[in-house]
Length: 290
Picture 1 (cartoon, rainbow, N blue to C red):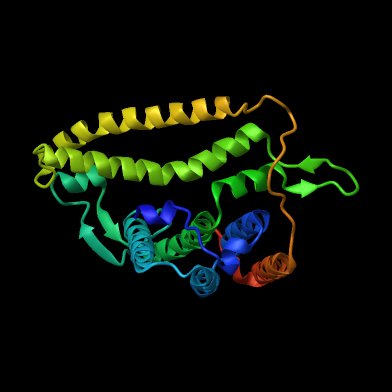
Picture 2: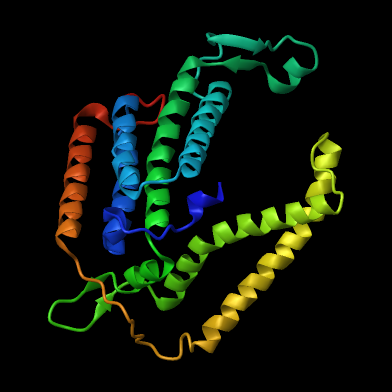
């Protein structure tokens, strides 16, 4: 699972793309997921992210982790929305799980009902999340944190000047550190769990056993993360971070042919999504009509 959040150093087309272009792609896919409103179009948008994964040649473990995440997402959204669908007709549910007249539980919950419209709505919402998550995971797996930092700070250059438009250095450093922090957190938790198991901690069992194990794992993990955060802060100070307003970089970003092709693809994708949304294939809130 931790491999989903970790950068993999490879020489692929996806890795060679400019980080700014990949950022625009992630943003474009997020906008596209909001523009489209039918399961078929959303599924098509999700499938459009898979060729970029194929370019990166992911390992079998990463593919299994992706299938688990996406499968859990679809199942969870469809299940929860089918039971908590506020726009459903209480008088005509698809299935009555607990009637309102059922003793105790019926009076507390007002009845538990299953709505097929809710499952459909959950499918639509899960596809929207899957589009964004798939693009974001592909971006993280193919972009080194230093490239992300450089792309955020020097996003657009003003013509005929040396002035760059981007986010402040502090925010860019925070974002790049957060991207690399997730795999470190997962790895730290696995080390603690293995160490606790070696000391005889029981993790498998009932709810009480799991709560006890969580209590023994939580505090060492928090202390370890705080220690790691302090090490990052000391390393930044040792390298004179924020000493000058205008920083210099060893590498410079420059758009190539593949980057311009990717930009044209993003523009065409957003243009198509805007058109389809305007002609009646966009997303609307349930109960407000189409």
